[in-house]
Image (tube, rainbow, N blue to C red):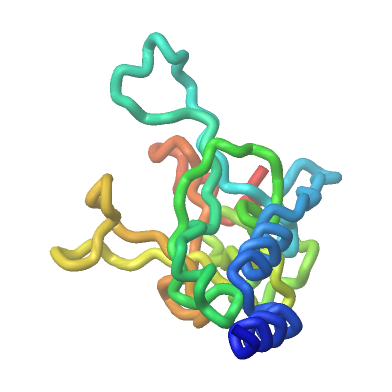
Length: 192
């Protein structure tokens, strides 16, 4: 009995108890964040943003079952609770109904080709989306791999989107103009 108590106290001092890990993870991932406010109407390198699916249909018209008002967020799974590290790569992402900006669902726009912080992003220009998830020790980058028979999203069967700690061609994103017929004309213009 004394040995168990000693082991418990030792784990509590080092912060290795499950409840301590859960509280630390929640404190970091659910920490409120401030989104960037544009002064000129454009999106810039270094801005803090959320990836939001605003939706356009009312609940009555939505027969496809697709939810509206979802943001992309770090997936909270049980394996991260039991690990010694804060988050491990690769790490999953999921859609959540919370539209309040917090460490879990905010991303920083990163330059991959040498663009300075504060410069506007242009249509067709590559950029990265990074997040720390509230932990200051490591940056994770949003990545998407090609769809294959072995690698695909669970419910949609489309290509996977996940977080990784390595910059590669999988972490390069580009903004495309919404109207496909005008994409060529708008390439090189700042993204509003």
